[in-house]
Image (tube, rainbow, N blue to C red; front, side, top):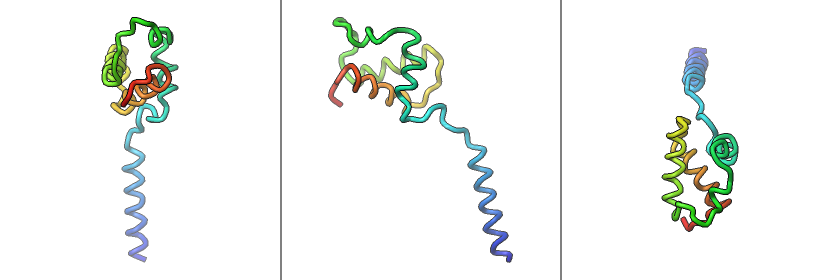
Length: 97
């Protein structure tokens, strides 16, 4: 009986800790949603396809996504920045990684 109560108490304590942990702002696999919600508020897709585009590497693309994220005060996780850069790379840029 005491063992069962101990297990129950441990389980409940774990649930309290989990419930008190903040969830990520957005799931890492939701890069397209982040793009649709935030990126196209400032510009359309023509910025990615113009001939004189300023981004010339995947690393540069990640830095630009981070600059945009900071400018908008979005407070994304590093994974969100990387995921959005990967989404843009897959859809528009096609840089080797």
